[in-house]
Length: 224
Image (tube, rainbow, N blue to C red; front, side, top):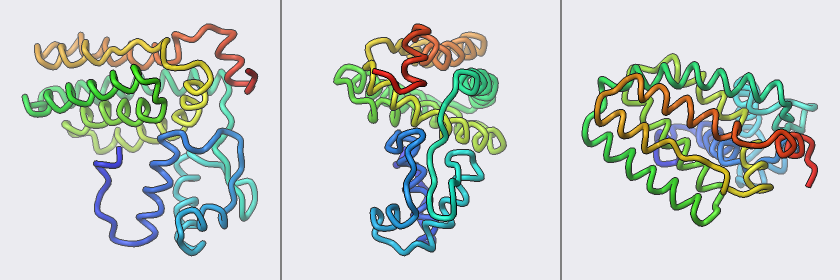
């Protein structure tokens, strides 16, 4: 996702996007608190821009404030995860359909290149690279269309689910993942709106949905 970051006008903006990227890549563990001072030291900045970035990320439901100096990625529950998955399906299929008429051959080739990177990440079992390139594939597709309202909602859901996804992938590996991106790019090439909608819905649901119930419960509880 880093390639699409806007140029930074202020230090506060830079810190916000650095933390946002870290959350999206799953570098913060759900339920584990971090301090404002610790983040400031990590980024080599004063606490002030960190405080503002944490305020924004808390408003986006990416973090929860535990006290004045500690924040954490929220713990995941089965019910919350189910809601996130269905909300993603609803919003992202709509975003894909809105983007489809605006996609050019150049856009399609970029998506195919990104999917190659997703495939490579799965092959080498690189969880962070998989999450990053998978989200970039989806973001690049949706940004082709007039989705200014939908994208912040979608990205909020990514921020809430990505740390948990990283936890799951670190625990069980990437072997269970079914990549539906080829179906999506084929649908784009043929301008098949229904096929694209089905591919995006399947890609989202099968990411977590392919887990067995026992594996899902173990990941949610933090058991080995």
